[in-house]
Image 1 (tube, rainbow, N blue to C red):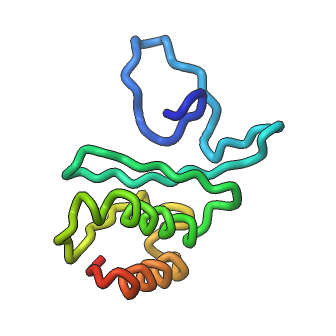
Image 2: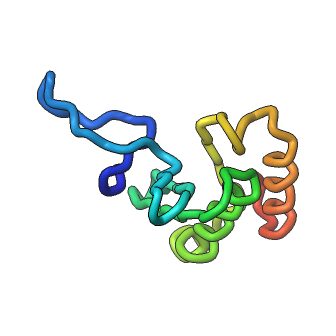
Length: 115
């Protein structure tokens, strides 16, 4: 959860006492719409969340991975030659979304990493 917003997942609370939240994609009448994408580094037990101000796109999804590499990933894993990506497989990062695969290939070509 980020503030009063909710994305798929669970938060353990006493039965019958759910926390009231808004749904993800964060549509707000005053602020507009934002789309969060996160990278969780299992080895470092650290995460990085990026927020886009446009639609949920394959470019935004892959750019979140790219930005994580630039900001945190290369520093934490300087000798890495491959990157394992697990995604929820829905929306812009679905396994059948051609643009997601194209964008991942661009990232692999740029970084030299095996994805």
